[in-house]
Image (cartoon, rainbow, N blue to C red; front, top):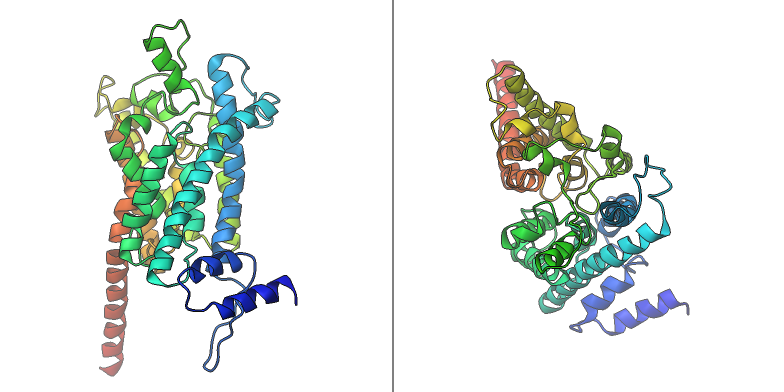
Length: 407
């Protein structure tokens, strides 16, 4: 008897035990369940929830690896120990020193995210006596990619516990939640610990600690870790060129900076039919539309250059896509099949409003010039309403055609 058969036999002998859901989750991580349906017609497909989640994780891995290199690169660049990488393939970017710093800072975020999140999932499964749900597999990877690199691990653990319990389990678990769990975790961090989620010191490893040492009287140079959005919001000139923004050689959350890799991930998700191209495209269209409106206001002279909103309003409309996290949010979080709109027309409306509102918040909230996660959470709440009215409109349209034929 092979290992797989032995595990199945072990599972059959221990049916009804409290801890069996936890064992089953580990067992089916690599093996198919030894269960078949009897009677009735069933759709047969090679994919299931676990494989779908693993496919999304595969699309996120390049962003994770790049984020590790970028964490070390931004750290040494801010200290003046290396020169600019001179492009995506620059010799000073893909170095072992950068990777070591990235691994030391980012890997613990991944471990805490999965350790706390899956621990709570297993606990709820054992208490309720049902199978462990695989929904947190993607959330556990998303969370480390959407937070600053130096976020304290205990803060992340508290936020993950809040997001899993309040954002998902209280609604019934995977498939029942109305808010994206990863964004719920980020929202908790933003409102509970705002000094660790905004400002010009949290995006580069070592900047916060170095600032504290300077304040304590030590003779050190301060590290400027300001993001492009932060610079624009304060009316400063931006030192990064457009290619730096596109390749991701800029400060920011761990996995959101490289637009090139996000596009590759988007194409992969669309090709595998897991991500909705309608939501992704409509989010971009909504963001570009709001950017065009602000550019028109600036070009028309309706706002003074001394206004605190002028900086972000004057950003070229297309540039909004390569700064901040609008692209990452559109590809990996707005497309969440549980919390997004389900109808095709609803997806267009849902995505457009996410992009539109994101840029609106970005411009009118200079204290925190990024509104993607707030826009997605807001539209998560309204997604069922959008689908309701789309369906009702279809029903009314068909009823009119039916009455016309009868008449």
